[in-house]
Image (cartoon, rainbow, N blue to C red):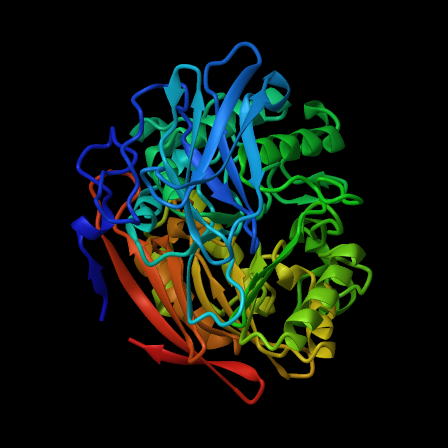
Length: 558
């Protein structure tokens, strides 16, 4: 039974001019200044047990400017625990980023910024806990495309006082111009991308980040909750690998330069720590430790180790029969030389999973940009799809024909996900298995679909479970088949694949994950629309997760 979230629960206040309503509780946030000096709001993130990163931007500045910051134990700043001043300038796009240390573990704090003539909105943040931890609540999000709609789900999260931390699994921004992906929707609802062209330069990426940070729902969520954020592909360009990207052409300049400026803008505009000594900007991975309850280890799978994606169009002549398709999977897709993670990332993963096991934390979570479960395309040779094809336009009919061919040949639908890198996935499982961790909960993004998956290695040993988040606004491409068509496709995908228990590509939203020592409860929350600010939100599916026999199991709830 779907559980409704009321409008009162979902919205922060009646007026969109206010970032946060004034409340009397200790957990409240104050109404921000009407000044535009801090037009991009405030944010916090990348916490550990004694420190957290605070972020803002001095908007409209044309010369170096001093910015004061304060951290307090209360929202009225009667008990200030840390303060300081920092100068920002054009070299970092007038962003301000402070790592505040010497804080108490597992403690809520409030923060704000000031310039000579303006004060920022107040933000709320929290350090990671130590010792025994009873409960942790995560909001898991991904794929927030400005042009495809309003960030209504961000607003629902901002209003949810239960949330301890937001986990963004990538595609925080998108690179396309107004003539590209989502441009028609953006024009229709008044959310066209800025700049209007595809972003390729440092100035472009900065302007795009600024546009996304201008969104009031994004500002509300960032002010209310700290965030752990990793990138996927669109923060630079669609489907990157070590030496290029599918959405980067030679006329757009040098790929390495484009990638580097995209990462520079990312570090400027997100509340994350600067690279550790000895690490490049691309070598961005973390292990967040929540006392005795949770390890959350995040992956970098785009810029430091990934081999080039395989494209079916390059092999079409040799993919005419089932035997040829199987040979293709065994010799091309499963080539052991193909990597998803760098050797340095894998070494970090091995060390940190081992540490988590030795520390006896109850749960091990992996922040993973793309879907990990094994999946082949379902067979669509049934009357429903033959009838559906007669109702589709030419582009959608062509898409259905392609899906039908993949199903007949029992081929995967997405070779950019881990299914396109099976040898690398097995190495990932081997790392976990060698540490005695067959109980992973993988949190995955990228696919614009909800997922509840079971994970097994090539020896059919259970490795854990996977929860996949749908897009905040980004739609699944298969919606071109219509909602009934996509629903049937999802049902057949689950019926065809052992590892897939349930999927839903028809909705936009996020996952609320509540974790205790007794178990994990996951609510898949969908918003009714992203093309209007009038919306509702509801839980469309829930799962309980239990741990036994050294692995994880789903307990479904309708």
